[in-house]
Length: 401
Ligand code: SPD
Image 1 (tube, rainbow, N blue to C red):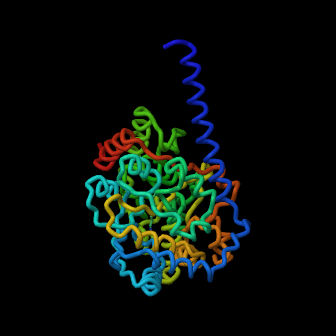
Image 2: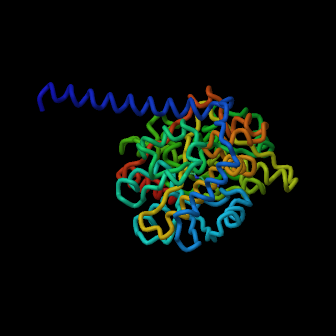
Image 3: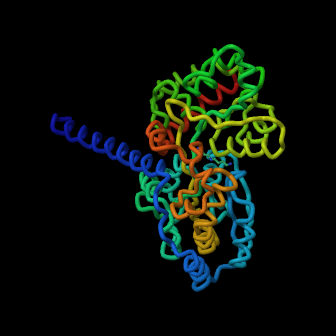
């Protein structure tokens, strides 16, 4: 290859890197803003347009099949949607992106809405596993947070396949009392990731129970981040190095679970590598149960890993119009705010902020400050090759080999 080709290639690579950095910056800046004036959406007319958007042209049978993560929907959302539209919702759950991805690849899922993480969605879009949604039938698209939409553009450049469900970050959660007791005279580390990746700490915390999410693409990315390697675009060598870090703490990990809310809330685990939103749910559950467990989602000094889970319509969905009606309903400002008010997750809906309880809107574990956002790792879609390598490394880690 000639020198001019090399310079050209280098320029393209640099341009791409700049684009990724710029997009990440836009997302991090936008998501960290709590004082944004919510869009002035007229809720009454939005509600009316929801009904007319779904009713005027929709001749589908009144059924909607949704496949989502557990503990991720406000308690009245489905009943309210059914009441407003007459569409009956069948709702099922999955626990990992890997499980959902395998179903989409196999085809004939029977679902009308699925909720992949954006770190998995690019190959799903490129592979023709998802279909575009009808944006014209979704007036509440205007309520969405442009920063979140911009971030999703790395995966879905024209925002035609994915609509945000929620975003949060992967981090470390602790039971404050139990951790203080297990650490004894050892002070809390400066970097919270040490609690799950540094044997000096895990050896001590083993006695009160360390829980890890149960999925290669949830564990390898934070381990890579811990050793200063790219979380989503590592080399095979990087993954090997992260595997070595994991191997050292393996004897100290008691639980593997992607629904660890009750383990944390009930005191079976005192430390969790989990999602800030779920750790906040565990906190609320422990308070409700008055069991004395004081749960806290930490914000590591070096940052957590931001994730965005997004609604999408599988290519062979039988009720795509009902799916759009639901997406639109979910993003009415008050409905989207219920996700934060009840479950502590942000819905990526700017108009919703006017309805979010002030104490939650200023809770940094739900809406990190702009300063904290600067440290966070934005999501990037994995390649099939990276997913394969992570899966092999994770199996070895779990087996303790
Ligand atoms: N309780 C529901 C949690 C859903 C979390 N999805 C996280 C994906 C992170 N990669």
